[in-house]
Amino acid sequence: MVEAKNGAHVLVVNVMGRIFMDPLDDPFAAIERELAACALKHDADAILVDMHCEATSEKQSMGHFCDGRASLVVGTHTHAPTADHQILPRGTAFISDVGMTGDYDSVIGMNKDEPLNRFVRRIGAARFEPALGPATLCGVAVETDDATGLARRIGAVRLGGRLEEARPTFW
Image (cartoon, rainbow, N blue to C red; front, side, top):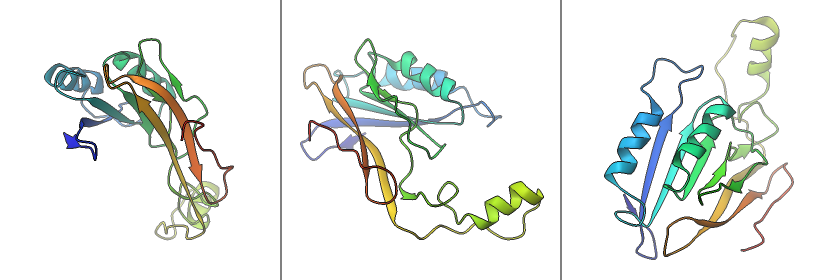
């Protein structure tokens, strides 16, 4: 539990998906336990769930699984921001992948040479090194309802670097 600047209590939960990442525990059972132990607006003013996994379908499933019980479900891991930010039917804000903060003239934030070499030659020749160009900050902004803890609005955030900038209209 984190205390926000305004004094609100925010539960932040990170779970890892299982598709292409086995063997891991069931993230849906883990979230069920966390949400049962710390209910929205009973124990926490807001609940943020980070679903770190490969498959968009698993991230979307987690969004629907948490809909109405979490303020935000955000997917991470694939490093590319998706354009599907939305408020689900029962009030949870959702995005399949928030993207990364880093140099997008890269391969998932790494200097392009070694990842490309591994794909072309199927053999590693060196360590991955971070790309050092201008960074783009990617994320979402969410406005929640103080009475329910559910989302009112969600907007994409992309600042600086190579990608087209995006700022939520409610900022």
